[in-house]
Length: 172
Image (tube, rainbow, N blue to C red; front, side):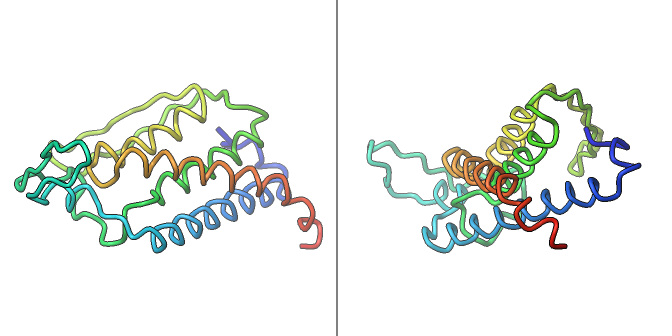
């Protein structure tokens, strides 16, 4: 999306990278404070529990269930740090881009058998940020509500970063 568009302007390039990294780090901090405050379990822990713990009375226990992403992270589940950081990045890039619309194709290697390359095409940053969240649910390491809140945290931190960054930027 950014590519070489800032190759000729070192100050704009530095500013975007500073905003992006500042927002992502601060979103991660908020997410981790939330994790320690709520101390929520991961799906693997909840699904392996054999007694009925849902208010509905349904038993969702499956002691043999394993997440796709292993090992399961050892830190608390809520809120999703991955979603928070992705939400912050999307918010900063939307501000830089002047909107949500993009035309980006990204490829990544799948590191679990069968090994292959997955290529994704995104037409807006919101969809990319949402897919970033969904990957944690599909991987079995987050509940939907944790990624939803993580994305909201990241978006707010990213927008606050963009809104307030210029107040101090020129002092650097």
